[in-house]
Length: 403
Image (cartoon, rainbow, N blue to C red):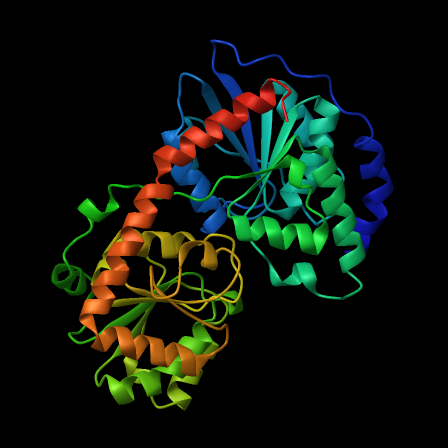
């Protein structure tokens, strides 16, 4: 992190001058570069991957570049864009050689608009857009817990955030709650902010298998299944779902928890389930590409995440009319209204999670009511078609030099 601090004066100099206004969108497709920190199977990457095919190919040509790490989604992005993603080979956070490499790439590819995703991409993209004279949009996906931690890293982090905000022509936030959080935590400029939520394919409900077939395909047992989909990381709060399970089973015998995903917390979660005597009642599916099948198999979707922006897994579960129990928080509250589109509990509240899960597993009428209301909400506000239209309008506005 000290290397990043040393880079600040140079970044400040690069951001000193705003490029001349870009020309309006012409009849030929305009060239948009999406810069990501990684091409791993995370929520940010998957949200972009789903959106790109829904954008108008007559208006936009897309390229993708990433800073570091393996290209887990490289083939997927190549199919979505019709061109291979371009690696930038970042070796450490303040790897200054990446900046001229990115500027050269933008000029070679004749990029009209740069959109950045995730913090490191925001910082390098801000400097590169200024040097290349390219319009810039950044997107904020998460109310990350570290954004409010009081450590020595906070001042340099906030400086980089402010510089990236200053360079951007527009900042997308995926929920109203995230706008409020970022404005309060790090001074997000509201006049530059546009709320464009994550979206889901409205056809997934028709493509999802029946519950019985889904369970057979996954090798899951009969009986009540409470599930969650997401990386096995501290952020996702799976620990509290496992701690809730003994109490859930006291009221709903035979209930099991199904976790789809991999991550650094798996060993801890397995150990906790064993310690509580429910090791046989927690099923770890590992990473799954067939998320719809996993969701279709569930009786109840649990989302005990500690911080979010606007979670894709919850959106997809709601699209399938699955009743849900979620922890209150940024982005979650934009989707789940308590006892209307789901049930809300406090973060880290295993007892509250258990009570809510027992209620919905035992009260089928309420579960169906909440699930159907959730489905209607998503189809009204969060379809990929609508998100693509909103994104298209923002791109055109930015390229015309409008705020």
